[in-house]
Image (cartoon, rainbow, N blue to C red; front, top):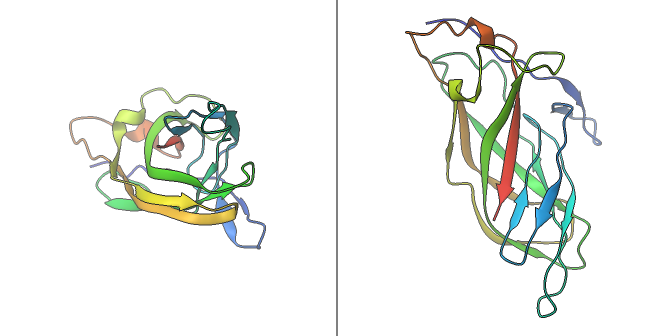
Length: 175
């Protein structure tokens, strides 16, 4: 077992509480069939986007998915850590229904944002259902999502030292 760990950059949230995030952002899109938000971060972050509906349902814009849980010291075999958060719905005139939030690791970077060689998304597992099943009201920090976990997989047959100090970029999707 290697003792690799992943570190996250930190900053301060608007209420003075610590927040963790990576510097990347991606665009979100919403369709009449569902909401897809792809974003980059490994803790508190937001992303924005827009979409289109049809004449019967009107136009709905994407909501932001905020990860508010803190993930630190991921190491091979160290166990799972929770991924959870809330939403920001300030671009719509009313609530938006979200069924669930899912997550994937879209990038694994070093401290400077360059792609790591020898460490990739396959070294980690994101699991859970991310059920929301509710209307997300207009506002900032509203609603909630959770029931997702992340884990650094222990592969004793592989040298995972390349993952030391990795920064993960997580893409969230709301449906």
